Every structure is written in C-alpha cells, then in structure tokens.
Length: 241
Image (cartoon, rainbow, N blue to C red; front, side, top):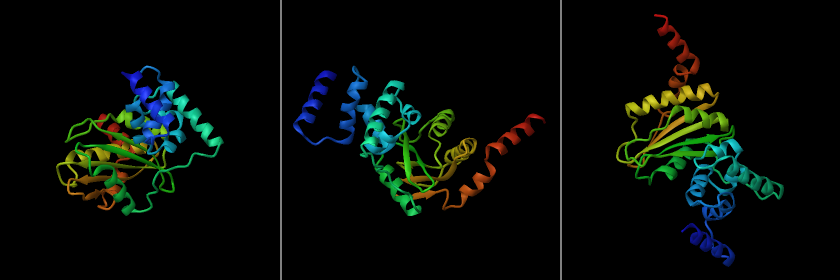
C-alpha cells in the first residue's frame, strides 16, 4: 500500500503538480523511513514547527521531541536544514506576537475550529517570535492529559525565553475550570524549574472569546506563589511537621 502511495507522490513531484508543504516533507522522509507511512509524521512536524522553514531550522533535540522522530530522522532533517542554510534559502515563517491582540488572533486561528480539546505550547524568543509549537490532543472533547515530565523535557530541550500555553473549551465558555487553575499553577512550577517565563495561559471558548490569565491579572500572582523554590520550601516544611 505504501509503495503505491509513494509512487503517486513521486509522479506528482515529477509532473510539477502543486505540493503542500507536508507532502513535500513526506517525500523527503521516504529516504529516512523506507518502510513506513510518513504522512502522519510530516503533518506532526509541520504542526509543531509551523512551516517547512521551521522544521529545517529546528535543533536535533527539538526534532526528537516530536513523536516518531528518532536519532536518524532528526539527523537527516538537520542535514537538509544545514544545506538550506548554506544556500541561504531558509527563512522563518512564524508569527511575532507583539501584543495581546496578536496573541488572541493567533490562538483563535489555531484553536477556534477544533472540535476536540487541544492543548498547545508556543515557545517564544525575547522579541516575541514564535520559535515552535507543541500541540497535544487525545481526541476527547473535554480533556487533554499530558505528563509534567514530558512538558519539562520539551522545555529543557528547546530552552525558549518564554512560553504561552493555550487550550480550548470546544463545548463551553472560555472561563477557566478548577482543573485549568491547577494546571496553570503546575505549569508555572515547571517553567520556574526550567528558568522559562510563563507569559500567559489562554483559553478559547466555543463562542470565540479568549480568556487570558495575563489580562485577568492572575498570572502575576501565580508566578509569585508557585516558583519551584516556594513549592520545595513548602514541601520541606510540611515534611518536618
């Protein structure tokens, strides 16, 4: 089945027919993954890094954080990226989030049409440029579960200046739930541990409205109270009682 699909993709390439970014990346991955359907991985890479340029600019460790990318595939993509850099053909295609309207527009573009709950991390540099996107979904309309160890590993690998967390309530209002409050605190502790600034946590409601922990004033209080040092001190104090 894969051979027939690959033949059709090659024919499309040779004929000069228009190819989507993920299709072109899928064809490139044929060489790195000879006996497996590369379409889902191509989609995941584009979804994570936003553009082909973003994929080819990613570091080895960032690439390996994408499910399905092992050492060999990461090295293969990295070598292509290096070739493109040497020929000056790689340019970043990600957005720059300069203000909260930019952030609202960005999260709405990403999440408004989703029918299941999706959690996304946007890694930013000091100028507010989105370096990479890390989406998670379990196909459930009401929840996304992700281990804190995985979040910490991604942050430690990518080492962004700041992170914006966003998720959607596909069947409800944007107002945060108790679980959202707990997750925001947990996320702050993880960011503190990795010396990354938690810039905001945005929630997109079914009505297209966006709730921002920053604009609500909550994020500053959470950042003051839920540092790794504070949580550790509290744990030690309770252990000594």
